[in-house]
Amino acid sequence: MSGRIADLKAVMLSLLLFALFLGAWHLAVTGSGTAANVDPEYARLMGAAAMQGTSAMPGPVDIAVRLADLLAHPFYDRGPNDKGIGIQLAYSLGRVLLGFGLAVTLAIPLGFVIGTSPLLHKALDPFIQILKPISPLAWMPLALYTIRDSGKSAIFVIFICSVWPLLLNTAFGVASVRREWLNVARTLEVSRLRLAFRVILPAAAPTIMTGLRISIGIAWLVIVAAEMLVGGTGIGYFVWNQWNNLSIADVIIAILLIGLVGMALDQILGWIGRRLGYQE
Image (cartoon, rainbow, N blue to C red; front, side, top):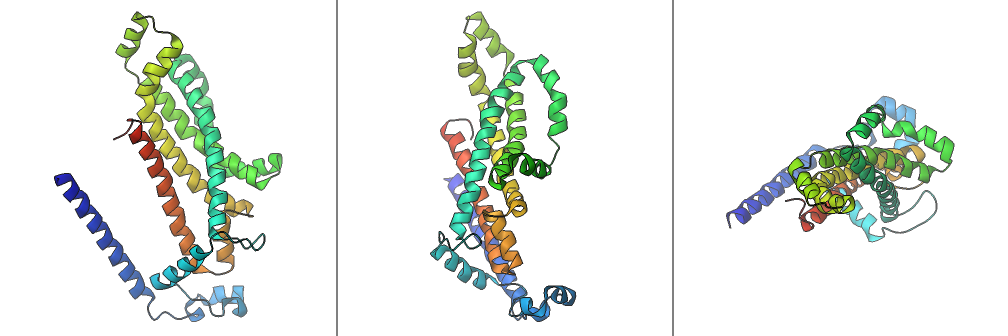
């Protein structure tokens, strides 16, 4: 009972903070002018015609109205540069899930082998330490040159950024399995395959789940930047395209949706972990 009361208080506090934020936002933009509030030098560079009728910053009411308009027809398709926000999110999610799936396919088995073999860990560690700090976007020019397809290049970048957290977490989780459990299994002459699936993998699963949640968060973060570079489709391209059109309300809405989708992906993996008994 006390736990539910604490949860209710947390929800009420969150709603209060959100209301205060909206109120402060509304007061900050109330009475703001149009293009006159834009930096004069910027207006000169963009041209008076481009800035005409452009608001300095939309308020929460403007965002709500525009959001309702976007969600009313989220999957319309009027050509390459005019697609609904639902289609843009679907493209981004598809790339993230495909790249993330490829990373899972490689990172978990390889991390498992590295975690069980100190020799292989020492041999591969220099390569991992060199490749891990490289920004995923640094791979984009090379991917575009070799793959010659912007969508597949974005998937490759997602794969690269998703591999390392999952690989390292898997290796760490496997290497941290209690020696006593392994010794008992060997005493009972448990086969290596049974040992892997019945002892090591369940013991390392919480750490692996943490790696999955970190990787999916990074993948969703990187896809936005990657799509800004390659263009075409996706929520990142939508943000950049709307900025070029000076549609600040659409940019704010896209930022909000990016955050909500990222939270949803993390919560889904957390729910799966709890259902499997690997997380609290």
